[in-house]
Length: 157
Image (tube, rainbow, N blue to C red; front, side, top):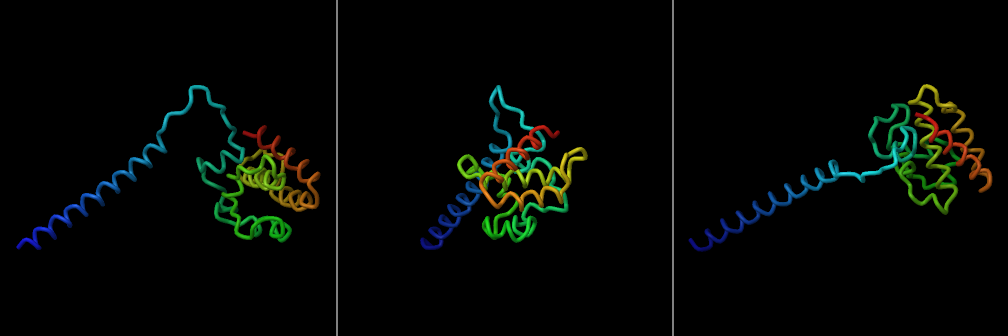
């Protein structure tokens, strides 16, 4: 009888712990979704890489979030970037301050999404893909295109 009671107590403790962790997980998700922002926040445009990586808007069906950079942009991109780098990861990169090719893929991803999703975006999808491939030849050309696409992404809305 004592073994049976000990087993019931352990089972009750296990149920209590599982319930606690499930509720704690829900609270964490709730806190992340509804945390207050700063009083003065910079309003990012609807065309920036930060916007697209936040998943606030559905991505165009032509470029799913989990598509790889190498499949979307072609074999030259395969040579420069990880073969499994997804477009979502590329848009959300934060290592683009010192790495110009990281900035290029980040801005190119946003530009490609904008070309499909924004009616008045200045570049077509084909142009964005072609310009990225051409800019991969040197750091200078990558920097020029990254800046150009960054300006187009910031100006778009």
